[in-house]
Image 1 (cartoon, rainbow, N blue to C red):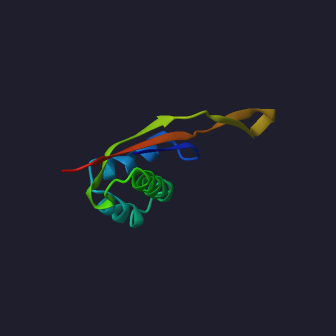
Image 2 (image 1 turned 60 degrees about the horizontal axis):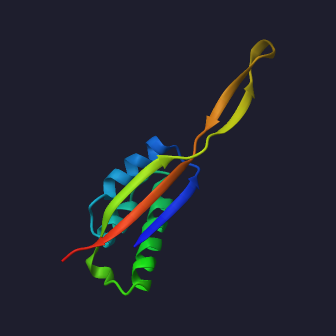
Length: 108
């Protein structure tokens, strides 16, 4: 009962703040928390948990007894872009990505 989200265009540091909110919670409670969290990573993480629930239901697990066993955010590849600056210079802009893994467990 696992789901992965790869190449999420949110920095890992910001995504970890949202992942820490739902770790260890019941899936219904976790989805409720993410629906009302005003962070850019909350919508993709909510969809990831819903995908993990669908994967668990395909394995005949009871959705009412599921909880977020582990959720962690790893760093994905960084897109490197350049921004023109004064006097012909350029500075690098790092657009970071995240890989998020969610594992659900069954309570009881």
